[in-house]
Image 1 (cartoon, helix red, strand yellow):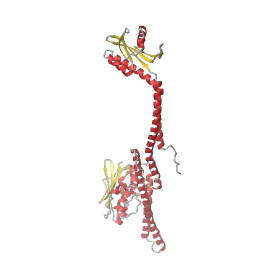
Image 2: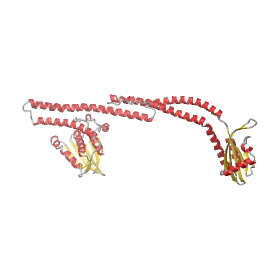
Image 3: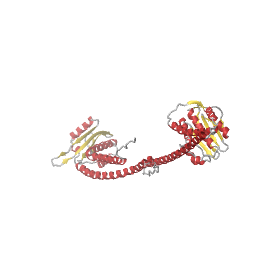
Image 4: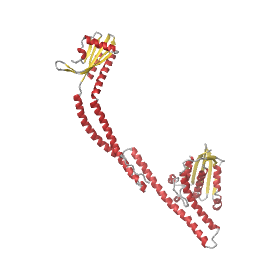
Length: 468
C-alpha cells in the first residue's frame, strides 16, 4: 500500500516566508530603536559622553587640559569647568548661558563639593527644564562634579550638558521609517520570490524527474542549478538513474539468460525421458546420465540465485576457526571426475596448513565459485592453479586460469549482479552472472579484501582474509 504524499508548505514559500520574516523583524527592531527607545538611547549617550570627558580630564589634569576640554566641548556639546579647592575658576570651555555651575553661588558650589566628597569624589545630578520670569525656558540637562588631585592641589571638574527634546526629531524619523519600511518590504518581497524560485526551481525539476524512475523512465535529466549542493544532488540522481537503468538492463538480460538456460535442460530432460519411455532399449546409463547432468545444471542455476539472496539478507554471522587449506583441498577433490573425463588440471600450491576465523559454508562458496569460473574460462591447456600464501597476518588465495582474460573496460562490472562477459569469450557457458556477485557478498561479510588481475595470459581472482 502506497503512502499518501504529505502535503505541506513548499520550499519556495518557506524561503519566501523566512526572508520576508527576517525583513519584518529587522524593520521592527529599527522602529523600536528609532522611536520608542530613541530618547532613552540619546540620554544614555549624553551620560556616557560626560563620564568619558571626566575620565580624560582626570588623566590629563597636569597636562594639556585645553585641548582635551575643547575636544569635549566641540565634539559632544559639553560645558566644561575646572575650579580650585576654593571655587575659583581655573579654565573653562564650551560655556553657555544656562550652565548650572555658573549660576551657583559660593554656598551652592560648596554644597556640590561636599556631595562629591561624600560619594567617593563624584556627584551626578539631573536638572529639569525651568521657565524663567522673562518667559525663556532653561533646558533639561545633566551635571557631573568630580574631585581630583593635581600638583597644584585639589581640582574640581564640573561638566554639564543639555538634553534637547526629541519630539520633532521622532516625528521626522517616523516619517522616514514609514517610507523606508514600504520600500524595504517591496524590495524584500521581490528578492524573496526570486531567491525562492532560484532555489526551488531546480529541486522541483529534480523531483519531477525522480518520480518518473519507478515507471521505468531512466532518461533522467535533473538539469543544473545555481548552488553547488543542488548540482551535486542532480549529479547523484543522474548517476543513480544510470545505475538503475544498467541494473534493469542486466535484469532483463538475466531473465532472458535464465529462460534460455532453464529451457535447454528441461527440453533435454523431457526429450530423453520420452525416448526412454517410448523406445525399447533406450533406457541406458548414457541417457540417464544426460538427464542427471541437465538436472544438475538446473540445480546450479537455482542455487546461485538462492545463495545470493541468502547472503544479502545476512546482517550478522558467527565465525568459527577452520582450516582454509583443508577446505580448499576438499573442494578440489570434487573435480577429480572432471580431471579424468575432460583432461582438466587443477593444481593447489601452498606452504602449509593455515587456519582462519570464518563461516565455513560461505567461504566454501567463495572458493567453489572462483574455481568454477576459472574452469569455465581457462585456455586450451585446461589448467587451473590455486595458490595459498601468507603475508603479515593475512592469507591470500589466488585462482588462476589461462584463458583470454577480461577486457579492461569490463573489469569494474564483473562483481555486479547479473553481469556476464560470455560475449567476450569464444566458449559459451551456462550461468546466471551471479557467481562473482556471490563471492563479493560472502567476502564482504567476512571483512576480506578481494580483486582481479586480468590480461592476455588469463585472469587471476584473489582474496585475502585474516589468519586466526
